[in-house]
Image 1: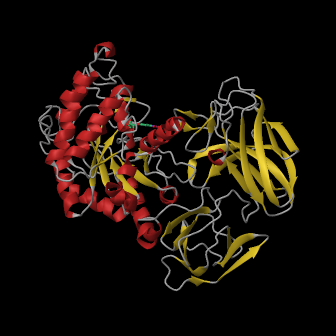
Image 2: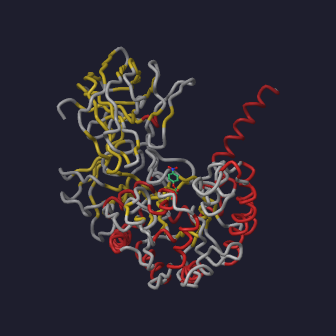
Length: 589
Ligand code: JFZ
């Protein structure tokens, strides 16, 4: 009997470390319903706005002190110029409200160490150190209260470039002399206490870049938050898995439904804090598509704006937010309070969300032939309609051919919306679907690494985005079971990803030469990876992949097992095999 204990103990440990939220489901409710929030990065860095002493400083705007190695004594002088005469908390909240955002998170203190609230702990704050002499956090809290908008605070708990004992400033201070625990107890904790005491109910504290923080220190901080305000959430970047929910990497959207609460922070252009020369704005179409995609995978979309030193949210951001809001006004039911897709995988045409007996088909690629098909839904459909369009009941047919369920909906030939069209399905009960990997109505079979099986012993890891890393050895494998419905010849494609470089995801950071073998039963193809073209994801145009043809295989309908193996690693740059998926596409398509 005692031999069972290690296993059970193991299970318990992984269950608790998965997400604290599971033990506190009540405080997660508003967050799960919200799905969409406004992030605000605002601080002294908005004054230089990406430029220091006449030079453009590369990278994100709020990191300028670090990137340009600006001494504390010099950076501090910015406070004397900070006078955001245009700041109007009411206007910011109205902007978020019109965008359909259901919570706000503002930088109360970023890595530069400057408090954007009236702190008694350090004079280095917006009230005491600037001619502005107001507390914007207090004004925002009051405006949010009037609008019933939950407000959270970003607080950089580990990095503080203003303090010798904080983490990160290696140009003024000697890191070997830093006493981080002293900083934590004399600045971070007292300031977090102020934020949770002086500004009414706080929706969440958004900690960031945990770095050197220990397990005990993360726990102490999380406990402090929950003691002062039991309903206040703690984000995943508090470190050591002590958050109520998890945060993905910046601008990172996972490839599959995650069965825990999570959030992705996303920039509207390429910076968080305002940069005057950053005009690389994402289109409102991309923002809408990302938001819907994130909701379909059980996540929240925290979309950033970086107000100027005068206190204005940049006009291009406001315009885009308005467009997202207009879309949500008509189709918000598919997002707010929506549960994720019952299907574990992505669809080429868009994504699925659900609510009770309803399924929302969020269509990005509208069918050209007037017919929309989806497989594997075993419920009876009572009604199909285009969301937001009053008299748009659609005719449909359900059949079971070749042993699988097919729903075919007659749809107008023009997409009802150019960003995402939503078809609502009313079902006889909560959705029941085939969660296996199957051939799709367009004939393709997509096998993503996040849904594959790796050997028990392997150096390969699979990221949230379903991409392998650490694949530097031959013999490593990924395997899948899937079902096909149509006989024929299939092209076998490998879709591999470049490495992220400073400039983002850049297809030049990709390496050819690795040789892959794909086998389905006793049929095999093998080929070196070569660049046969770029594939960009309509959900996330910022993360292009490379397509490589490996050969062709004929398949009979039925259950199959596919294995991909590395035969040769031709990787001189040690990027390794960065496989996202194996795709089978009907030949000649
Ligand atoms: C951090 C900050 O350093 C940055 O200034 C900004 O506030 C952003 C929201 O968060 O940057 C990160 C933190 C984590 C990752 C990437 C950037 N990550 O996990 O990929």
